[in-house]
Length: 307
Length: 309
Image (cartoon, rainbow over all chains, first blue to last red; front, top):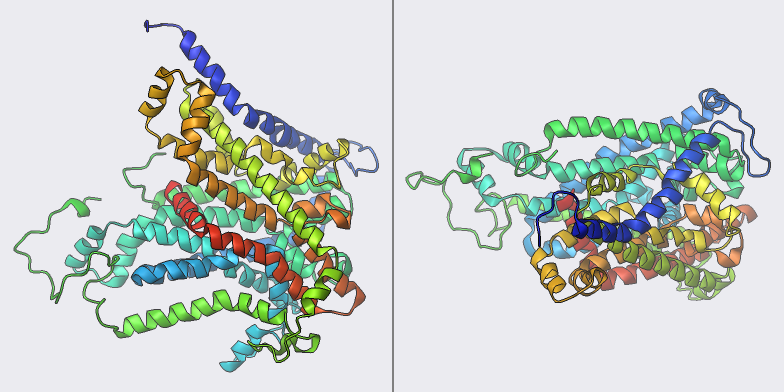
């Protein structure tokens, strides 16, 4: 094959074939991502409601966003839930992964056990935990009672609605356990032995050897869990919302996505809901950027940082 | 870090270490394995408690779904009275069989569509070299950060305009165009195939589509299965899309139907939790079965994700 200075026949052919392969994604990106993004941005400046053609209302939706106390409330609820679940979920998953790491071959069995709840559909988990967390007769409070603890009214006391959402999420933390366990198994043995020889105690070894070596996995799960927590919907809607609860539901369980969904598909305020969606996007973007910035300072990439 | 490469000088006496550890022992302070010290006892105790916390709710569910109405909350492991009729009555709470079949069809379609399209696109990004590869793949990754809420309403309007609201098409059709995370995952697998294999096939006259179909796909079967089952589970579990798109009870998926059953009891003010729990079990069981058969792939897939992350 002759040397070519300009893109030659073969290269052009290769590029053409490449675009055939990625064409589905490009079409999908235009139709289901880029186009809708533009449309949603435009909608957010209108009072579109599905029944009536929308009028351009300028920044009225964004003004209303600031004025509507339920937007602020739902955002605060979402933050509180995320602030409870993400650190707690990470800590619990890491602790369990470290336990599994020490039990040798039995780890296989426990991996299965811990992952099983993840297979439970969110609606099913929500329904089950409505009963398990029942204040008077639920199993959780019964077990707490054995230890002399009087459990709260998880599902009815406004102060306990977000913790009960976090409990259900905590139950499905199995994916992180598997990820951490895999990361722990990849920590080279020699590192621990070297640290041991240098006289490092268990705490020191954890902080100086284990944590840096699994920081990549921790970083990945914290970011994905935060993004998911900000968009929490299924469980909250299952447990606390529905046609019957519109008036009775306490705003303490109103997470952002539930309120957005209600605005879009129950009140048909689609312009307003689009504005909410863009605000959520910006918030997630800012959080993720901060996390990546902070993370890059702590995350140890084997073979040097690639980014 | 340079610690790992430093050889242990032979004259350094290691701390008292009665016997070397077996080769299969995972990392841990040496010498702690053979006997069950207080640490090990505590560890096993903690694991036992965790195991109970993770499995007991499911066991409780099975038990509760077999109890009469008055005993659902007695929290006994074995029901005092076993009421099998709950599983007969659950079919009257709604067209549950219909919902199950709907969920099965939708999630298989969704999983099949996303697996094939993502593999196809991923091959384009893995095998070919072209000028916009870097930026375009960056764009693929960037879409992972976009919350579904941003596109949710316009996409609904598209399906509305096409007259496909209140059909199951919107629940899977956009999977035909690949999904960012799966494209990323499949690409990693394709990159692991030695390039010489493709080149040899090219010389033998294999077409580019042939490279994908005859080499890449067969070699990455585990990856295909991983993508398939992850999407199967995600699609089965989803509540938001069925809530948005489905109004006719006949078309509901199982989670949407389950929500309807629970709401129905709430609306009537008379809670038949035993029926609700039977329906919950019916919604969960298929996924437990999938897990039983494909466990290996779920766990492998997650471990791979961890390495990529």
